[in-house]
Length: 563
DNA sequence: GCCGTTTTCGGCCCGACTGTTTTCAGTCG
View 1: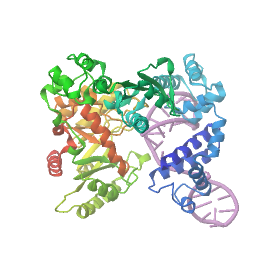
View 2 (view 1 turned 90 degrees about the vertical axis):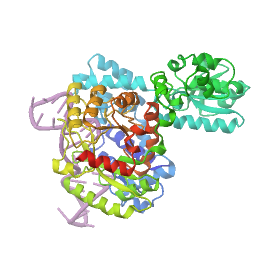
View 3 (view 1 turned 180 degrees about the vertical axis):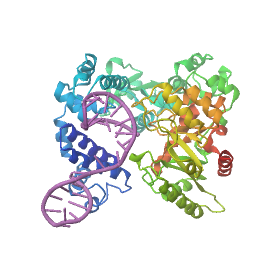
View 4 (view 1 turned 180 degrees about the horizontal axis):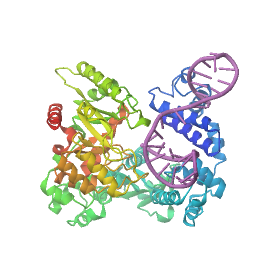
């Protein structure tokens, strides 16, 4: 069991209590326990009960609940509440913009227990008539429901990969002599996975079908399956699974066909080539077509055929070409690990610099830094830099901040304070609902601010959960080009923002991109693997990757930029 | 349910924003 599982159970219990009309302060105790524990580095699964109740926000009762969760794997209080909650009401928790209180009203006052009924009620205006609701809330619920329904069977890449890997592991154990590979969306490193596809090379397809059907957690959809294709689902998941079965001789051909998008296959006769005689490698397919090899993640049928004529695959960014990690949080704001822990780990992973960028003062929810805390942090950075760097292995913490872009486009410190940083990530965190015109003038003003080094998560999107604020990408990128501002590829699998589809345009305009993990704890650094994956998909080269600069180059750049 | 004392019980939280209201509840980051 992980800390997160415990926190998820406590948070859901809190939400359910609120939904069922429990005392607000009691509810708040659950949220505050989760809030505090989320930032703690204690291992909740092993810490003694006596110490648990000493943690901030955890009393005797909460400690007992945590103990119950870690011994039984669940919480009776939560299960009892779930028993009394219709499934459809639970689903309403996922609608952005309404919380447990409004869900309670919908459930009890309109007697709605199903999201389809809720959509109908929005359409005939019933929802707007509830006290505290109105036309806008009703419209927001409606759009949100439609968004959720359209995405209900999709997964973000990290979740999709996890499930695909689960099935792959089991199949490899059960079919030890077969070639098995993940293909489709996941092999192309799509940020959103619509179906999980695997390919098995085996001479007796029915044996493969038998193995899959023998797995208790895989449920076949017989009507859409065939002797060579197993289709169905994994227990408790709504994403479709598809296992293609090919003859061992044709494995590479099929692997190619099921990995590339139809638009890619349609060009240069690639599909025809792959459908002919058995091939030993994918490279041969491209050779036969008379073009250089194209990496799997790029095979979308968009820019890759032009790209490969002007570049080589060696130019693409890799994990190893990254020299430092920018945009990270510490316990100064809402991070889990101290500045020293973050820095030491970063150095030990072999990076040359850590760019710290805690939240700025406007982000009060995240304990953003007031001016005195900025000074304090800078003093600590100076001390740590002396301690962590050696002549053989130079390492430096760069003084940064993730400065909130305010409603009017300004950054939230005085010029005096802005000057004191080595670099600034400017990000929007508030007022996400703006017209495009307003959102763009705010963004442009922030880009034009001479202290802005990097534009952070430029659209604010949360994949499968929230569309970003309206952004005219072309206009934004042009402004970054004109002002020498770097754009972040936020590597969190929840964001992956800037979208890879805009990388080529940014490069054309000479805008560098920075693959930033937005790490709130040490392990968060590894999110850069997702960032690298989508960056390569979009054709980002090493020489245009901001954090591929060495420490010496980075320092020189930041100094010249400040001038 | 937690906290911090007045050690037994009363008061609880961070503030902006939105969409409702016409002074504020709910939601969010």
